[in-house]
Image (cartoon, rainbow, N blue to C red; front, side, top):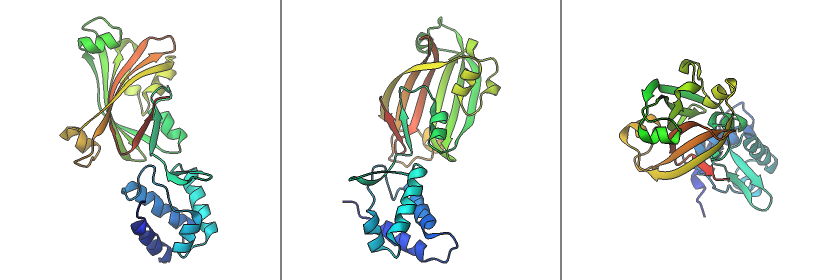
Length: 246
């Protein structure tokens, strides 16, 4: 069973501090900070409302209000008979055609992007085959670092047929939004997932710990008629993403 002594010590200190914020808000802020700094991990089951109220100078009603606020923000999920569990910051279906940005927004978080490259290049034979293009075709290479609530979570390279992009500078946070604005409807995705240790560049771009692998997601996106419209390779933080196959 997980030792929650460090968390309880931090909570006790923050709840005793002179602060105008209500106790439930301070409680929730400590839990969110503990998730960010790794004190709490995905799937950790928190002590019960009764246990928190017995171990801390706080009422059970206040604990319940704090946990409800955390649930509404997507930090935890609660189930009767099972308890309160820390959610993965990013649970993402590999078969959905929402796109990461829309998925993040639907979960109450803020996506952003730092573009590294938007250039027209000649694709190699493998990319041409995956996009059903003749050998030596031009595609747009779109490379970016993706952020959720200002925290870097992945590095992504996308290859898109030249004919599908009029002006790459019009692509903002979401490539899928660009597609839809140009009457291109994303449909089914075909994905392969593997793990590897990151190279120095990726490690620096998303601030990874030395011993943390990345999840490598190779994905081909089809439109609703089954035509390939994007091939992407994403290097994702393995401590933040949970990918769902269905």
